Amino acid sequence: MNLSNLQPANGSVHNQNKRVGRGEGSGKGGTSTKGHKGAKSRSGYSKKIGFEGGQMPLQRRVPKFGFKNINRVEYNVVNLETLQGLVDNGVVTDTVDFALLVDLGLASKNGLVKVLGRGELKAKLKVSAHKFSASAKQAIEAVGGEIVTL
Image (cartoon, rainbow, N blue to C red):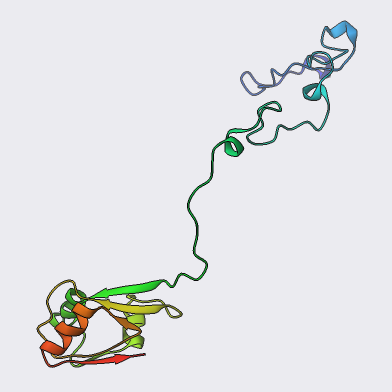
């Protein structure tokens, strides 16, 4: 073995790429396998997403619809059955306020809370929230509870 007959180990070299643009004698010189002229033959070419060769692209042909109300107010929803579950688990005894709901992960720190009337409430609670549905208000007051609107 000497420097003239060194070879890499079998299977260690994987480069099977065609060497383009290395002269006419290679058979891959001249246009470097890119054909003649046009954007695709130039360096730096990249097709834009959704480009259809100048035809009006699909996302511009299709009509738009609907609308997004920028004044929409999002509420974190808490149902009566959730409040009753907190009472049953011993988490709550008499008052449910915003800070407690945030600690339990039922509301976000900067969000608003609305109490809805799904489920049944058996415990007498003082509930603090930003909004109440009519059915929730009626159900809380029916068991002797109190409502505090924030």
